[in-house]
Length: 71
Image (cartoon, rainbow, N blue to C red):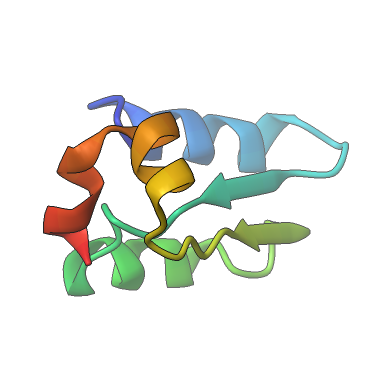
């Protein structure tokens, strides 16, 4: 959802693409408004991968210390 046109792309894909659609997210950009829009497409998205991260020194190094602000 980093792209401003994410939902336009999703709409295009659900209307014209006949293959499987998968969404991968860490969930940080899913708010109530975005969740409602995603719910409209729930029958067209085959897989949603939701990644959970724990805060560790290694994880902080890989993602940068700013990730702690999101927890």
